[in-house]
Length: 153
Ligand code: HEM
View 1: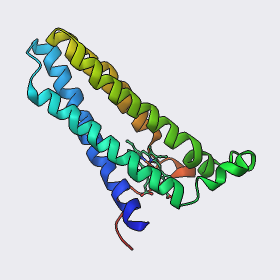
View 2: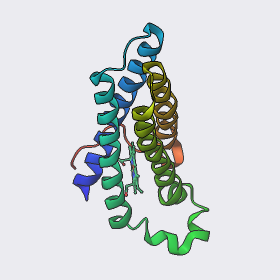
View 3: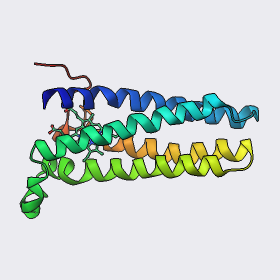
View 4: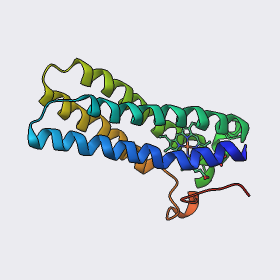
């Protein structure tokens, strides 16, 4: 499972990169009052795609690295910050973020004016990025710390 963990670790940077690209293009669209272009749609498509791949890799890790089994002894595992984070908090927050990304894309498509499209992009994808940033096990979060970059041992 090392390969899945390495991919899940590294792909987080693609998620953040495409997410920030999406937010910047929405902000520039609002400020300059420009049209909603294919490039805008492309940035949030790649954001959604990288999030979807993370979900797949995350589910594989969840089942194979016995996080799922820990649900059977939820009471005891909730007392441990690391177990609580990876059995509940991380996956749940990321899945909410993913729902925001998918609902956001549909909502942006349905908006009738370019300004509304840019504003909805900023709202839905902005909220998703906040959740993703909060749910990443950054090295400075002591109890749940994971490396910024991981490679094969
Ligand atoms: C945008 C979405 C996501 C991002 C950015 C993300 C990011 C990360 C990162 C950076 C790690 C630490 C990797 C390492 O130790 O090197 C991790 C671990 C983990 N993630 Fe995610 N994740 C996402 C979604 C998910 C989802 C939806 C699940 C599903 C339940 C999930 C399950 C896990 C699990 C189980 C681990 C711990 C793996 C282990 O050490 O056994 N992740 N995630």
